Image (cartoon, rainbow, N blue to C red; front, side, top):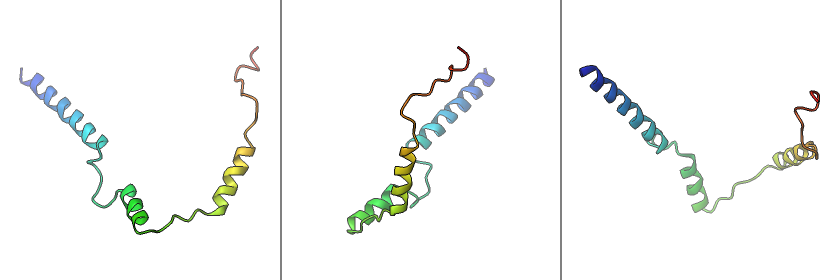
Length: 76
């Protein structure tokens, strides 16, 4: 009887720990990135986007083939 109670308690503690982490309770104070970004926007600062990232993104899009990939093409 005590063994079942211990196992149930451990399972409950594990579930609560997972739920706490999913709700954002596991973060360190001041480590919220979204919070920092919203503060910067409130102060009127714009996020500067480097042109190199946009150029790399566009070149990567150009490397994507137009036709779909067929993984079974060599088997048939």
